Image 1 (cartoon, rainbow, N blue to C red):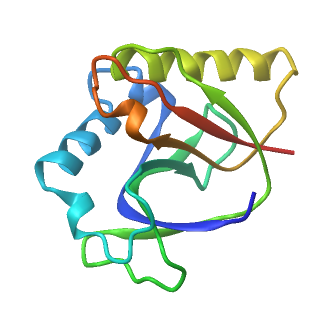
Image 2 (image 1 turned 90 degrees about the vertical axis):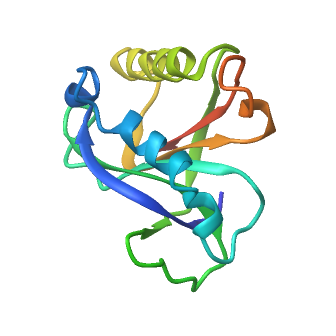
Length: 152
């Protein structure tokens, strides 16, 4: 798959932090919708929302950057308060979540990814992974989405 550019809001976190009440990812989603971030992103391609995990310090136990935004045309510049992330091209495994409430099905899918990795059935690059929120995820109580995991 070819690389592409995403612009949005970004935070640095860990899975350990996200497993607590102090997780930053739910706060980022809240900010994204409350502040109408998607409407402020220039040169968007398509109407999907992207959640990007990148710049891993190590593996799924280390720090990483989490960005929520939209795919944009190459060369686009992030507005003040936002970040641009160039996702590298490469091979990706695509895992589709179950249908259900987003706060339940997304973590379940990631647990499945970690289990496959522990079983040596998935060999991740830890360069960039991303979730695509398309028309199937418009109803947050009955949503489904695809998670793209960078493969070696």
